[in-house]
Image (tube, rainbow, N blue to C red; front, side, top):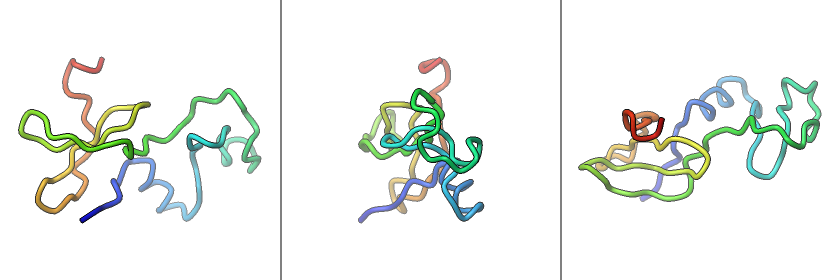
Length: 91
């Protein structure tokens, strides 16, 4: 079974009906930059896509991404429970 991790950024883009953030293979923010997809080549305004891997740790299931905090997911339904910075471990 599989699910798309419903990150804050994905929800914002779904609500807007269009891309709002850069991805790993584009740069710049199309809304902020007047619609120019590659306006700022050194922009670090990426969305957390939580798509690198899944790991069970500390009795919880986590969706990971190299560039941001993990997202908790429900082990039974695979529904997104939310982003978690693991207390002080990631600060």
